[in-house]
Each structure stands twice: as structure tokens, then as C-alpha cells.
Length: 147
Image 1: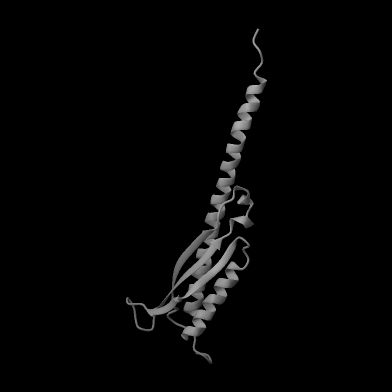
Image 2: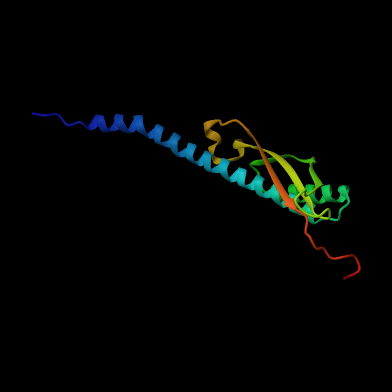
């Protein structure tokens, strides 16, 4: 007479369940990382566009860019705003066009804080993120006091 194998199923479950849970949490960690990269890229792009559409004064352009970058990343608890590289957020002449056209390049940096996410139980360390964006100043802008 054959004996039932009830214990085998319990042992198999005990061996595979932690592995499946670790894989699921690792997948969630990958999704959080991708989302954080997208948010940083978006914030950097918005900062570059803001600096490009600002008045040509470099101080004002940098302030517009920093305000936009800080405001965009402020809503995410898992992203720590390290800084927007204001030296890198500069206006330069676009060599392929007329001298009135400017290109603005910005470099944004942030840190992904995994301890503020559901995957904190795996003990992931913080990850430094960086994004670069380029925007072109509008070719035609309105003049102060109307057209």
C-alpha cells in the first residue's frame, strides 16, 4: 500500500514561495526605478523648457528652471531632489540656425529612496539618478508692452 505524499507539497511550497515573493518584490522595485527615472527626465525636461522660454537674463532663466524642477519633484516622497545643475542649465547659441536662437541644456540629479517604497523590506540601497534635457528657445516671442 502506498503512503500519501502530503508533506511533499508543504515542503515544495515552503521552498518556492519565498523565491516567488522575492521575484515579485524585485519586479515592483524595477517598476519603481523606471518610474523614478521617468519622473526625473520629465522634471529636467520641464526645467529646460522653462529656462528656454524665460527672459534672456541668465539669473531669471536659472530661477525659472530651478523653481520648475523643484516643484515637479516635490510631490514624490521616494525621490530626493539632489539638485538641478544650474551651471549646466545654460543658454548657448544654436550653431545650426540664426544667432537669435538659443539652446538650453539642463542636467538634473535626484536620489531614489527605496526605503519610502513598498520594496523596503528587501533592503535595497538608495540609487543616484541623473537626467539630461535640451530645449530650444521659442523663435518668436512676444515683446513687452504688446506687439
